[in-house]
Image (cartoon, rainbow, N blue to C red; front, side, top):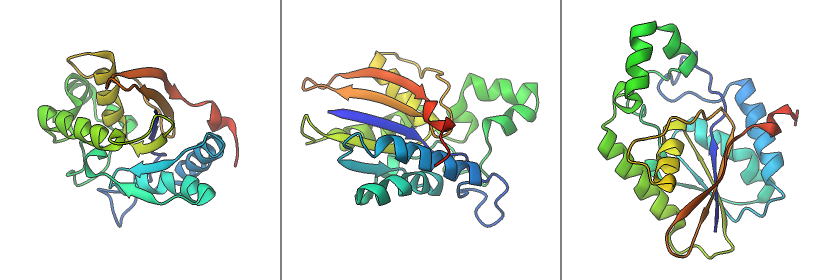
Length: 197
């Protein structure tokens, strides 16, 4: 089967109503529509999302185009799900060299998560997503940067979490084989961002 991991579009970091779980910004909605335009002809059979608003909203244009329902799997959420405010990597970098170094050293801990629990949760979400899917299935998962990195690390057989740059609205593609292995097809596709849907 094919698995497409889509990082959510850029959120409105200044949202006052839900600073911990902000909606998409105008740019984020553009990225969501561009991803939908790319994916609508690829035969997606199922749409799965993180419980966070920015991931669900990014999935909505594709779900509308394909007439598919959106299924939430809790552990596709980001490590910052318990934080009081969403902070982009640009904001974290602007907090200064010391804070940025601590974030880079262990982003999951910096965002308030436990690395072992977070990794186990993401891999559980991955297992639930691919379970019982036929070889012909194409599943689109709308999630976040750190879960995507956990999955890539797992697919590559790495003990530590990789540090792939995963842009807002980007696509990362994997194959899931009958023997349970995952193969990485592409990482951080952003060419569709040039479209203005």
